Length: 145
Length: 145
Image (tube, rainbow over all chains, first blue to last red; front, side, top):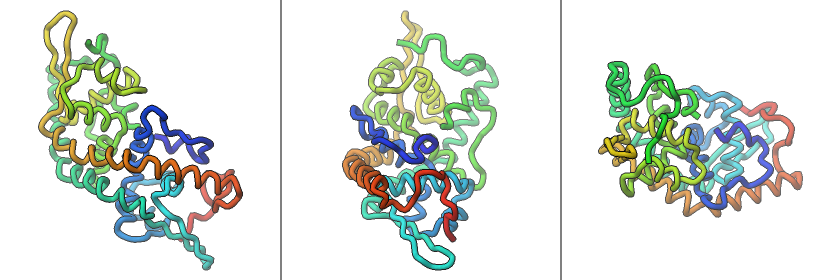
């Protein structure tokens, strides 16, 4: 996951030959997309996101928000209140990402049972010895031509 | 990356509380989406995919294809020729994923310069001491309420 090595990025890591790859890696990231969908509904505070996105650690939420802010997709606004209040909301650029991200979410919701069933069928076939691969090697001997 | 710990998965890892999360993690994965887009154009052999997807290792390609097959998104057909020929193509389920994945790719292509510029601006602001965060701590002291 790219998040783990880019706390304070020192250079633009976009691949010159395929610049969309790095962008995809970010916007296709599970946590990023879940945050973008939440912020598409309304502005959120940090702890609201932390509560609503089950399973995300505070560290991962902090890192992911920081990357989304750096990418210009999310804006962070701090208010000088006690306690300190910080709002996160989608930027104009971030809002353009809502449609494709939402389409991907809807696909996942619509087809989760298909995927679950496919996995069960596949694992069952493998357990019955009908699978085309052995259980030992990670890499097939000859992937093919 | 989920690929690294699921060579031969022993259980369905779909989160019961949020089953779309695991699905998103898979279909939003950079390599998976690049493979799905390639296979959306035509059937490919392993080595064709390896050549066309710059930067993917043979190991990662093998793992990602195996997951896509297990998820029911890609089918693998082996022909008893010399040398062995193995074709990968999208299943009917995999083809339904093409539209949202393609939309995400198109967004990435359309906005890569915006993101690149946002990163440059952000890093410049940070370097000039205008950023709202220090460079030392990974976690902000008090994320906020």
